[in-house]
Length: 291
Ligand SMILES: [Zn+2]
Image (cartoon, rainbow, N blue to C red):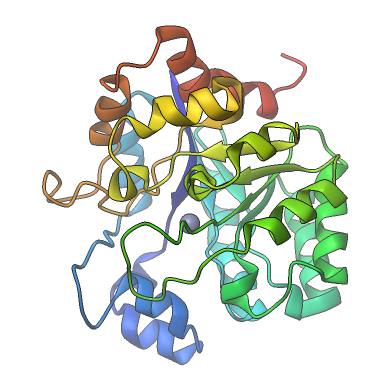
């Protein structure tokens, strides 16, 4: 069995016309990522039915649907509304992390409290440098304190490696600021997305509340990166994630899937025990600490 720690999902009202939808909400950064004016078009789209079919094909038992790192708090609230429906319809297969923008202040904190009361299991994906707030922010601290209240909750934070390929809207991550945030919140479980951009892994190993995920890794690195990451931080701190429905194997995939990423990590020469921890055990232990 496998659990995917990092996917995104949008309703048909968004992907019928992303340009119009995004422009109306002032989400220029998102629009540039999903519908760039130059370079390859990697963003795929999927309905919830297609998502479940693709999960079945690749033996993905559960997937965590992350919100986007929206520039506007109101777009976060709209996104939470979609996720609310999906997790209510498929509680055994789909879990949700709520999008959050600290600029919304008390309204954003309220939206998180409501979401957590209704089954959301944390916050994400957030990326302060793209969302217009700092890693040192009172509302962000309050949000992370909420996550710390439950052992089974996490916050997923986007990380960009400055040395990997350029893509539209690429904004570098000040990794020391992010590490300082995780240090200030030792009881909050953090997932640094995209293998934390392979930055400062020996230091992150000393922060027991920090995990990494493998979302979009096939787009960024060669397959031997998994073993390098295991050697630097340990397999017990890495969570499998895809970034579905992003086409992370643009040459092999005509449509988004999970199977290509699963095959690739399973054939990367990783020890079977490490693989099982990454694909299932680590996240399952977080989600069900009493099991
Ligand atoms: Zn990301």
